[in-house]
Each structure stands twice: as C-alpha cells, then as structure tokens.
Image (cartoon, rainbow, N blue to C red):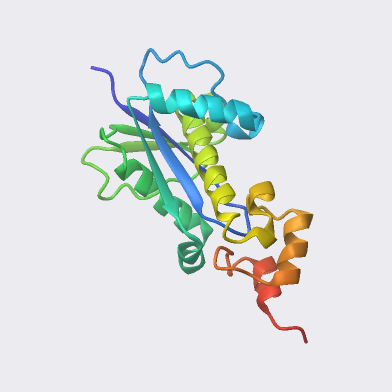
Length: 196
C-alpha cells in the first residue's frame, strides 16, 4: 500500500493585514492535474482553475488559518505553524507523511501516531503535493481578502491582498490600522502611534 503523503504550504506570511493561510493536500498517486507549480509563478486565473481541479481530484485537502490576533500573540512563524497544524487536522483522511515547504517543521504532536515529516526548501516548485497546497492556500487567502474588502473598502484589500504595497502603506498611514492589520508588524505599529 502506498503511503498517504500530504503536501503543506502557506500563503500570507509577509502581508501587513489578514490571516496566514495553510493548506494540506493529499494527491492521488496517479493524479494527472497538469500545471501544478509554485502559486507565485502562476497567473490568478490559472491558480483559480487549478484550485478547482485540485479540490475535485485530491484524495483529501484541508485548510487552516491563523488570524491577525494570533499572529500578533505568537509571532508570524509560530502562527504559520499553527495554520499548518490546523490544515493537517482538517484533512478527512489522516496522512502518514508530511512534505512541508520551507526549512522548518511545525510540531507533529497530536497529529497522528507514526506521522513523519520533511521540510523541503522550494518544495512548492519540486513536489506536486506541496505545489497543490501552495495553490489552495493562495486562492483561499486571496478570496478572503476580496470578501473583507467590502467591510474595509478604504484599504483596497481586494487589490493588494494586505501586502505592503506603496498603495497599502499610504492608506494605512491615512486611516490607521483596522482589525485586520497585524499590529506586531513595524509599519502597522508605526501607523497606530499618534503623531508626535
């Protein structure tokens, strides 16, 4: 019997606002979904199309989040690990092995007896399951940031998705932080301080 391998990746470590989102994906051994790659190398339309195929054909997938308050309380690395653990726990079928994009691993405690994991630098470009997770995490997070744009239209979240673009920094200075902003990030902390 082949081992159930889940690829894990995240989206949203760098932005000034919004959650960090992780995905875990177990692909079928004979999966023939064409075009899976690091989500950052794909157009938005391609990511959306591939995300639908992955959701339809994967053995299982799970999505995990850590919100801005958790990011501020834990730090971005630990919040990312929390989102990854939540993604693994959201899988309908437990994996036997994890392949995690990056050079560090989340704690495996409580995720299943005998579970093993390996960190792979640039794994989203070399391992199909990690690439699939990259696509799901990115499309899930982008869709969320488009939805919250209706709640906070003055920040332009639908356009920049919370990343530290020149436009976002300007709007942050103009309006100050909203509840979606990560107050532990320096540009947000600076925008929250009253002028001297």
